[in-house]
Image 1 (cartoon, rainbow, N blue to C red):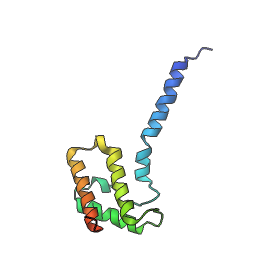
Image 2 (cartoon, one colour):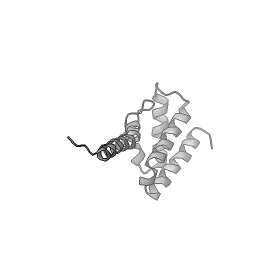
Image 3 (tube, one colour):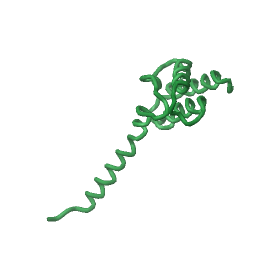
Image 4 (cartoon, rainbow, N blue to C red):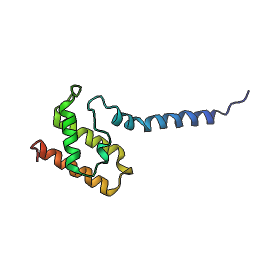
Length: 108
């Protein structure tokens, strides 16, 4: 029986790529550190996003870092992983949420 080795290499690389491409979505949904409100990163009010992240970080018993760092890290993670798929307006809103988060923690 004849097997085209190039095809199998392509399948292996393709499957690996898809698996690696989706890991960030899994982290966002199933974060071991924070239980996020559904759709928090899609909200239009930066203050509401920041308050929700702060609340989630404060309630979490599984986080390893301090509250501020956990909340900011999750926001940065989302921005960095979704970056090229976010509109300019969405990025502005999320960056304003970072500013709001700093204000909430007195780290202006």
